[in-house]
Length: 116
Image (cartoon, rainbow, N blue to C red; front, top):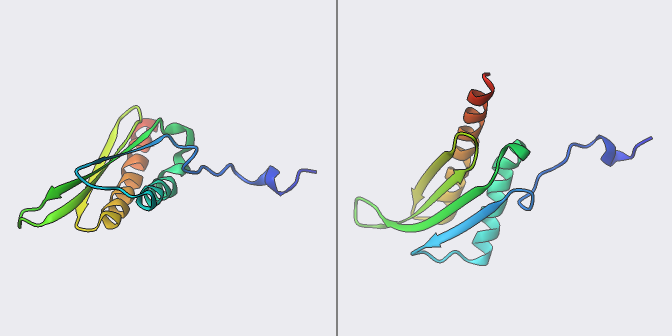
């Protein structure tokens, strides 16, 4: 009889996704990189093998009021590429909202491709 691991589904982690993090005009610390990888893995790992690679671009942008903001843009390689972004003065908040959007957009794109 198989042990407990025989019945558990395979869990995908940040290591099983091809995640590239790029920074432009903003410093992304090692701790922030770990946070970004974990958020991306938490949001997108459920799609497993259907995702080719994920590119996260972090940049410093000005907002309409002249203040500074951090933009997080996430691109997910699928047959139909998915690109989402969010801007916030706090990079972590921009990452969190962008990964939430990526989850919904990838689910929608995969559903459309499968004809559901």
